[in-house]
Image 1 (cartoon, one colour):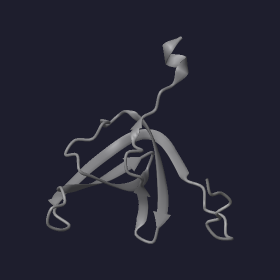
Image 2 (cartoon, rainbow, N blue to C red):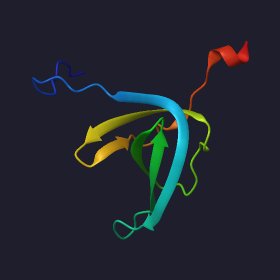
Image 3 (cartoon, helix red, strand yellow):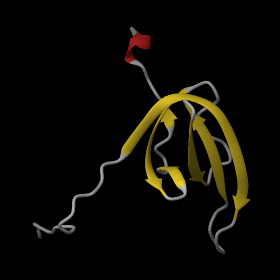
Length: 97
């Protein structure tokens, strides 16, 4: 097995994580990026006053307004983009005691 490959000399930026209450959801789409690609939906999510963008093939989100959510995201010039398949309900262990 080959080993020791490096991805470059600079360190990769760690993923940013956000959690909070989902206050607002707005859906756009469906969009067709190119032929043969499934329809994409773009969502604008407001979590604790911060606005995030989320793009997925699903017409429905796995969370609802009022849920405590957790997600990974990256900051770009266009805003904060949630990583695909990282949006979900935040589970508080104290609720299950």
